[in-house]
Image 1 (tube, rainbow over the protein chains, first blue to last red):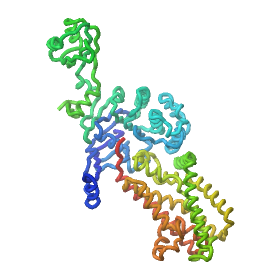
Image 2: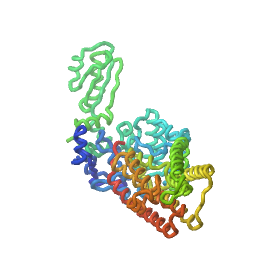
Image 3: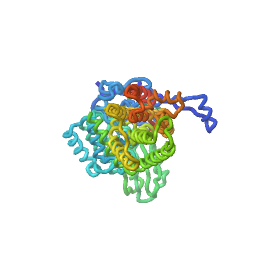
Image 4: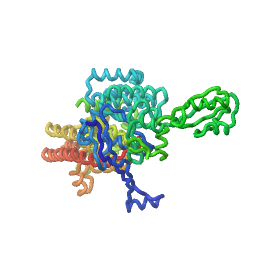
Length: 339
Length: 261
């Protein structure tokens, strides 16, 4: 049985439709008009225990709203959610013990208490016994280096410190399902790396993780499954690597030559590839489909024209694929095949 | 239970973080108390008005001060801002009851309030002379009324703060509540000074229990039977509001929109 299940999940927000200016606002007082905004539109989703799912989509696509519906914060307009077979509103208390939620832009620490006290309050709220609590804290400390921030007041934390403390706060009760909504937003690279390592640890322990992020580096190497949402609808749900294999066919060969070569010569000898000049002289970029040509072939052709000082091949990231999906360039169906 | 106790303790500690703020707001209330004492002293110097003598009015104002200080320091601001900000989302994924959790927080701040009341009442009595306390049964009834005041006041503040789910603004809600409470609870002037119809309406409203009821019992301006009725009204409102608040909360959840993040 899936641990998280959503069927026909829909959330409609009603937004006051005021005309422009003061006249519009006054008119709104007497004749109220509203506009319905469908934030989440008939989403079906089923996540098995232990899965790590990436949930991505452009701004305003409905990612956070879905997470709030799946954690029982918002009541769906229609459709239903089951967490471990339980109804998140009716069984709020039981469900709360099984899920952990982190919203990167929000904190659940007390501003006016040291982090250690905030965590202790959460420990008592969740009824975690002291021995287990100490063990978890020690584990968080290994990766997140919590020790140094425990005595700091909530309001005095830097963003990176706050996020580490909030991660501990979201996981202090050892939830089986964890929703991470933009968990690395605004963090510097060092902290990001540490946080990502922590996520991998979570997954390896069998925690079910649903990760929402704009930073696709969070996803690569962590999630196997990719779900893409746009305008409230799931437009793709499938294997991340398969998408990458299928759509990330493009390779870019960067070469540096010892003397200038006319662009036309390069282009005519590499038909099917797109050759462009890079910013510095003597550097060229060759863009090609890896199924039409191998990097080795491209290098061989170039070597017959000129001496190569250096070359490097870039593989596209999943980011490129998703960017193309967002921009409408690429339409995927549920099996990851372009329509 | 440990969860609620932990919340109460956290608030008790957090309150101390803002001790300067606390002293400042206490200063403001004190100025008001001193001003009211001075005004009534002049008004009542010659003859009692509506049956209030100066020592009685002084006792009334002190009880009103105590009643006004209880459950006043913390809580509603934090709760309101969490609702307006959307941080309330994180309160919803905790395995505790939202209403009970907020009550625990209100109770957590109580100890500081009780100390403040003790100091202010002590100083006032030292400066302006001693005060008569009512006989045993009336004193017990007064204590019961003061105890009921805690959940009653919490609930009135709580329900009105839930209005933030609809108004998207806290200041308006707070000002409206303060205006209504100050007038109808008898915190500004005893209810007998109001027009008869308004006084009667106020008497049966939940607001009378916030000042008027304990003050009248303390001054023995009502006999034991009447006092019991007034305390029963307090208790009734506590029950009505406790369960009514749950309905409001349920409606608020349906209304909840949390934008961004």
